[in-house]
Length: 102
Image 1 (cartoon, rainbow, N blue to C red):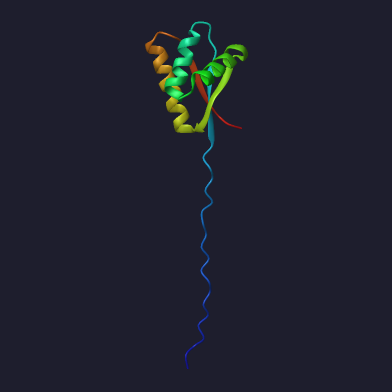
Image 2 (image 1 turned 90 degrees about the horizontal axis):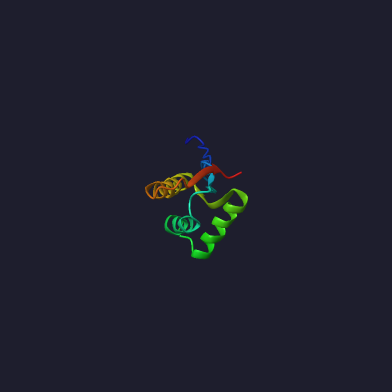
């Protein structure tokens, strides 16, 4: 007289992983930092080619700001700080900001 055992399938709930928010690193134009220095920083910190660095620098020069890269928040903040530290050491007020991508 075995009792009827009802087996229910186990429901496995996978936590929905949200993609981390991406952040933009923005180059802010100033009237003091030489163009060549800006390009050198873009090449050194953001691994840009000479041509890409020149285009990003020129966009910031013309429009006031230019998006350098879009990446994870910690990387964006680290690179931004690294770039500004290089500028500070060289005595330039070069500025980078980070903000969430819409």
